[in-house]
Image (cartoon, rainbow, N blue to C red; front, side, top):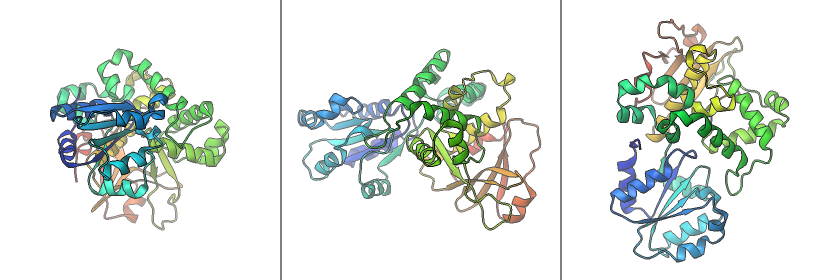
Length: 372
């Protein structure tokens, strides 16, 4: 198992906290991360899998049956648990002997003020498929660089990394699970076939400004449903939704969004394309999705407070990725190492304060692990 950079901080929080929340996509390794972290503290835990309907129905009885010398109760896939807020309140009131670890792959049924309080106290951990940095630390940078093209095609999910020969089947099972199961206790998707069609359209339009109306017309959904489904899948850590960056420039797009996938493998399984890189005609899209998704992952894992955007004009001039923190950083992406990429003159005239860079196979390492 690839060691995760958040483990030591997570273990410190476990020592003195009544509740800790771990969130991230399905199959990214949340439960093994939790169990390993608890075991290394020489502590004990019991796991309740809340996506099991029998567990959900009898959750209070199960909690009452936990022996007092158990240190942690782990609620796995806790987004399905209607009683989660009530259980948390019992924990804070001292009615439970154990501390609680909540693991979820969608927004759980918890009061928003409590979520804000947990975030403010550093008690929420965002875990994703292993990052470039984590994989490079584990395998070594030369090996991870050798595997780069596999990452672009199959992605980074632990089951995929562990067995590339079965990667296609693993990813097909994963996307079927996403489409055919309820995301959470309250938010459901009722049109699985059309949801798959919508995702396929987004996969082919990767990184392009989208129109909810156009996507809806192509897959038989109204624009409000398309927007709702996209937002649900953002909450489920499947999609990344990036708004346009603008001021009052005449030619700038002002209300558009680009959609990316949290993992390249999920995008490729939707279009059923696992061809090697040398025969593909979508390398620009694959590369852009990879570096942007990896950077977004890194920002969240390290709690780096930066706003992210893209920039585009009506004349199709584009900046692929913008980070706004203390500084304004703007990036163009290109798969080819030697190709000279030109920054749009209009962007430079509008935003002379921005530092611009190109992300290609020679320059991406620092971008994917930079903390400033």
